[in-house]
Image (spheres, rainbow, N blue to C red):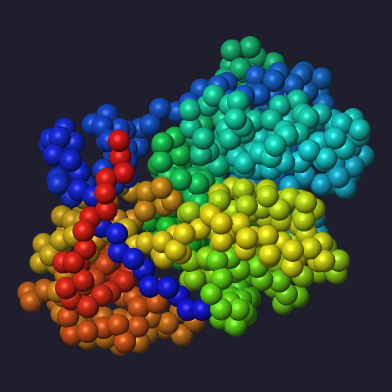
Length: 581
């Protein structure tokens, strides 16, 4: 099995009536908006200004019950626990909700389970521990939607449970005071893609709105929304939540706060990573801050990340930021080893529609990262299981045409527990059932996936002669930031480009450094994603994104190559059929 070649799909041109409705915008920007399903002038205005309407938190099913029970606990001075998750979304949600509850006068205990020892979500031992500490109310963030048995155990222990989660629920909801999840079938909230930290934010909004209307703590100093928007941006981007609709508004607002670096932990992380605060964007969250915050939970305890995000001490923040930076470098080394092991196993297995890889050599904290790399490289759903005695845990990642959690739902009898969403899931399984799980997933994949599904698609936003690509092109693209899931960085294509120079670069991440020419200007370009010297003819058609690079005080545009074809390839392509109504 080798990495399959990409299919270039030129997105359909914007209709003339649509372009006419946005006549004050450039043709490039009109096309990019259309490609992102922005179909009216009103939507275009909201998208470009990051000003989507934020939903009323009380439209979330269960929010009223949650606020009522929390205010009852505040009135009675009941201790409260916030039960989070060990990834950035769960940690940032915990770091948001604990101070908000504390500002209302509550005594709050944060609890973040160990990835290695406890695994994802609620577990009975942790609930017993909290009950023994005198906790009577537990609020989950980023977990709990499928914890039916654990909710029953909580009830037996005398614990009331409020669940906030954004993962797809199972057939039955846990018994709790409230289950707040926009993916509930009976939920009326208009935006369904909030991250776990986004739901914690909505709960905080509802609590503070009610407190301002009917105060319980007149001497309390209530926080402002801006105080936590940096956390909302961190968790939302790092969890790969779609950056559309309300998420786009929240992340835009949160990036403004992150660039102020008022939180000591954020300032310390940026300093450790040599990133200027004013340069923070979604990329920095996804590839610089997020991996550092995740590294603690992958290798040791995620509580270090929670402490980093909540400490008020600059000295302590620097110590923790250095610790997480070191753990992230160790994580990178171990992940590369795991990916190489998995790659060799996939090559040995040959072409399959889904890969289930299980071995003692995989680390449970890195299984998701390894699965993600395998899915990206081979364009197949993958499950990576870190074998342990008797019962093992693993992570799954998938392609856009295969809902991995629904597939696992069909195999529920083979697993102790599982959960997730369309693109990613986690599972716990007895070792004797792994072969059966592999067989079942292969059966489901053979049934549901077509040959076309197994060819990775490279969506081309705009075809333009390289001669016409310039600083104005960059400025138009920049209006669409922040980029991420649901709003990918625009991919351009240019035909008949001359390859002037090509040389190899990098070791851990080998690639090519190129000089390309349109006959007038010479462009610097880099390629990392499977582009080889063998693919380079004297003249090529090239698909790429643009980035701005500063070196020795000079700033210039550079091409990031996504794929190449011999010259003439683009001329033979037809745009895909319009998929908008």
